[in-house]
Amino acid sequence: MEILMSDFFQRALAGGLLIGITAPLIGLFLVLRRLSMIGDTLSHVTIAGVALGFLIEVYPIAVGLIFAVLASFAIEKLRKAYKSYAELSIAIIMSGGVALASLFFTLGKGYNTDVMSYLFGSIYTLDSTDLKLVGVVTLIVVIVVALLHKEFFLLSFEEDAAAVTGLPVKLLNMLITVMTALVISTAIKIVGALLVSALLTIPVAVSLLMARSFKSAIILSVVIGEIAVVIGLVVAGIWNLAPGATIVLLLIMMLILTMIGKKGFRA
Image (cartoon, rainbow, N blue to C red; front, top):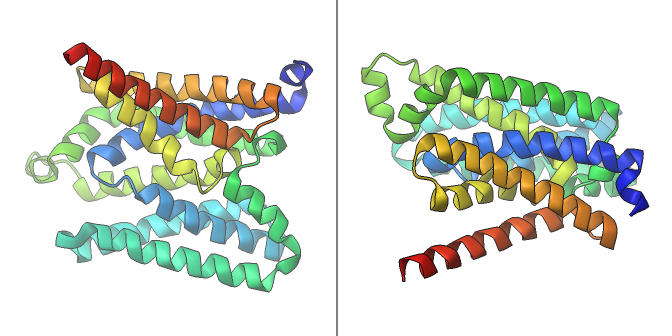
């Protein structure tokens, strides 16, 4: 139990709680827009940026964040070019991200172990700089969603109607995608690039089964994300398990129990 009181665990908990807010908040709009896989795409691109950061000896998360934001612009550009095949943009950018990551891995064999920690998460190594960056991103996301949640709601369900009402659809689409890039690039050190998409989507999946309104779906998705982060970190800390994997498996368990509960209630 001593681990729970250690400084590194307290930093991990703080970082996890912050991501537990932002990931489900953004994830809800991604799920409603049928863009759930964008998390995997941007996480792969972020890993390419992290690898380059190690290669040129620059703060890896910062380089990964730049890569993710640039990729978000590219995704929106391709989505407009292929309106009937929006998912094609995700496939193209993901392929490019994987290719760049592989190239940088080859060029920098000496740091591959460090990069691997970003693939599977390294929440116990969070430092004050990481926490400050995650805190800033959390503040940005919370403020933007609080101010524009109605506009995002309309955009998510009926983009054409949103355009007719005079909303700046192009700007709002770009804003959601850029915020997604910010969240993913700061979350990969916490849960890992291979698992970050789960934190974006599974809390939302659980909340959609329980919520009776859009507002309650927002609240529930964040609450579920926070519960999974706290319990997952405590369990992982006590039993020496992988934190990111523990959080994600706990989320899946919550989803299964919710589905069983819904089925039993209907019966």
